[in-house]
Length: 473
Image (cartoon, rainbow, N blue to C red; front, side):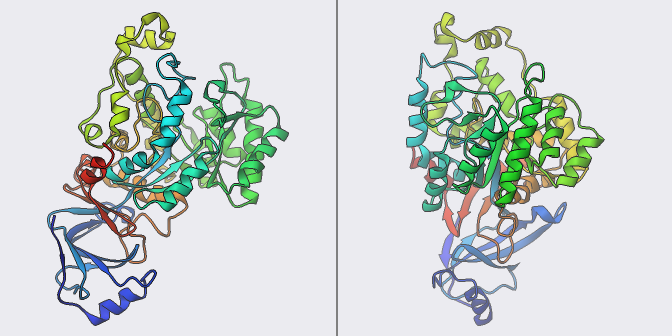
């Protein structure tokens, strides 16, 4: 990768660029010779041997390298033989969770090994490193769709940092069920027992100007929470929409997903997994212009990790937080009598772990119905690590029947919509923010090539993934 300074220039091009300068910065970054991929413009939409000019944090020009003259003094990034895509966006993460075995004691109580208070304290202290693993993986934007009130500090920390992705956040999840195991003073899930309580909590969160309000719509084993859950969705939607904020809903059954759409949900943060979506669901989703986030891997992450079968991919070995990798194994060395029943059962069964066929089928149906889809991992849950888990997720989206180009659009254009930044993100075009990823392989030929991150450009700054990772080890 060669970076040099141009000695020739074009007065006209320089003047065009000057219109987009920020803070009077006259330095130009020129990415020269790349194959530029435009995910939102259809299959195979590329510009070969293109030059991209960046001023400050904005793209100011994209054109053929043969005819695009560089402003005098421009810094040149030689991108011959490489592919340039918009920055990836993970539309479903949780910063208060780490992805390791100890991060969800309500799902697997291993607090006899690591107390939950110690786990959350580590996550808080490790936030700058977590930001860097996202960038090193080519992810320049994330949406945290529910966590403690600390999430608002996360958003501010990301805004202040030069090595952090864009971060949109929601506060605590409104739910009809409690998770006291997660309450160490700032719980990520708050139980509401009535419509009045739901309205009061929504207003309390909205005073902090979240990017979303989130409802955790849990059906219950006999459907006992459906009626109140539907009311909570409706009230949360009323309050959020009155202040111009979108409502995100966790609803993984067809019944609850339909109720969420009828109640005003703007975003469904998971797949419907209990049965195939039907015509009524698709019509409701189109009418609501909903954004659908499939999160195909997260269930597999739990099963692999808690059965002792989880193994890091090559990308996770390179790009995941090494502290989290070190905390991913060793279940077989713990006292068996202290392990939760669920963990013992999974370890004994040692069954093959596969994605939900229904989730795959439903993603295909939703996408074919022209309902907007965004790529999201639910990173932070057990087995789904911050950063490189996006590669597992995109592989499964292709397995569901989407083309690499369609998956890339979900991870860029769809993600821009999730962040509420569709005007600024999702394409390599003049006027867009300079959040870009330079790849060593063609992502349209094989989605696996998104793993081959050479450089990341965040707000116009060129970052080397290996150097980012070295800085946190």
